[in-house]
Length: 485
Image (cartoon, rainbow, N blue to C red; front, side):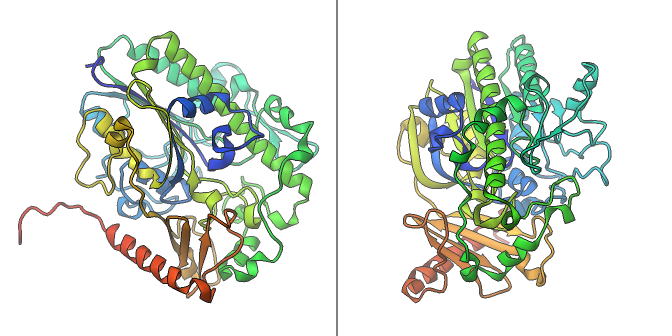
């Protein structure tokens, strides 16, 4: 069985926007290992998450279904126990499955779920759970590991910028621990004649912005060269009204552990330091991915292992005056990296077609010789990848159904949907007549909203029809129809 079916190393970072890797055009970061995976594999240039928030996005790409049909359209909302996750399907087909790091398919707020997050029948035989860095849950196995080593978790203030911190050193970092657990699991699996899937779910580069000092130092000598966020003074005048409210909204109102970050109150240098810290967290991930890939080569597992690198959603990082994840459906929040590496069968390629992140679910199943399930709302791309043929372009859909429970003057403004078709991208603020329309070929930073521009009325109408069709097509196909009536 092991010789005929590939292992799967599924690496998912948290809150990593697409333009944070060298292979996606970032000239500042130091990501040679992930860049090498992209150079030898298939890189998807225009991959979109189905929600800009953790739990809904994860419920989607782990099932191949849109977030709202899984029951998990919000953080803090449990996924339906009946949902069939990829690791569960693989487990039932003979794979052994493990995880290190975050899962977040169920509520995990420590004030409500003090021990850990609840689990459905997710298929993971081994579950090294750590929702994040800090000691908030007794079941956080990263924190248990630190205790075993006699190391106390702590972060230090950074004198030059109050918005970032100096995190744990690399050898005691959660990112390193996640890879340590993967190596241990993979080595043990070699004793058994069965294929494995291992999910590494790093918490980084999710806020707070707290890289190890070693990784931050690389950026400090040239901090002035770091570009400022994409934000043009006055651009909110032609954006939906809720975005003005977002500028006043503070994540600290919802989570006191996240610093109150209002972009318009930051200095240029503070913006640069935050970006440097965020990139430094990505650099650490890259170093640990490199360590893991080298271990696969040493143990002889490399040639028979599909490696996926991706993220659940992005980070605004000051663009349009916003930080963290937000209700907005800008590129920074929903456009994510996706790399599939398997030189044994896949020729190197860059795919420019627009695609939805949840394609990864049926694609991995078909790669393992398993027929995708009836309830999946997307298709496998495995045949196209193996044959080297073009990925068919599609209209990509992202939903935001009160996913962060923000407080607006009009609660209906918590519901937005987005579609990208070709170079055009439209988002609709439900409950109002407002929306956004951008031509990404001429305005990649989404500064100039064309939604109310008479010259684009015909394109706007076409995009609204496409969005309406997509909304209809996201209807849950389950339960399956079994007869005519």
